[in-house]
Length: 341
Picture (cartoon, rainbow, N blue to C red):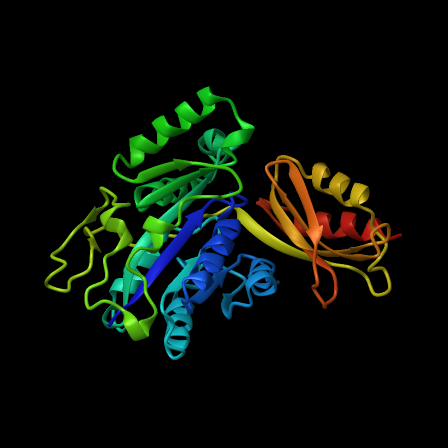
């Protein structure tokens, strides 16, 4: 019996991890024991720790690169490790600049094609920023191409943060989505809350799995896929595509750590002001920091000019991962160090 795989893609800060948290919690309620692969651009893990802290899930973490290009060879190894634990399903959360089509190809190639099957590919969009992607990233043609691939590869497209924009914006987003994918299920939501019943349909604990579990993409289907006979045991496969290419060219991830003895030095206001200083080049920032006014560890997440804070039990040294377009690492590090002098 092949293990069903759900892929989550979408640009930086769109809400993929929040959706994955919901899927994991629902899976637990259904008695499922899934495996998780978390890919992050930065050298330090943030989202994987969030999943472990909130759900206790065991996570295979692939850091410092994208598994659709620079870290592609590592994905198969991570999946093989998960399969040794006999999971009921596998959930893969990609970086925000990953091309999900390359992940699908990996699943369909030896040695994995006899052990796993694609259950569904989900793409999450940030309603506040989705309309600006093409113009904002026009200098990075590879990234624009990847964002389009995230739409064409999806069986389910979740337009998140839809409560923060006007109805006209949602109509324009739907128009763009349908230009690239006219068959995917399209859901408008906030906090990544969706009906998980059709998504998890057919995924059962392995000791009582049906002989031929139904696949979610029979509901959340995409025109980019061609369906083959379910009775013959074949999986839905991609039509022949062009050779794999890098999914981005100008996005970089830089990890900033706190100087020894300075872990409690920055206030929320100072850190948020520092984020604002890099407006235009900073796309995403996330990490675990210790705040003097809170006297506690906080998870900080910046995306789309918004900064969110929440309590964290992270036990390690504080750090923040910056992800942006053409970030000047030397200048960023210099300005960061100046905050502590």
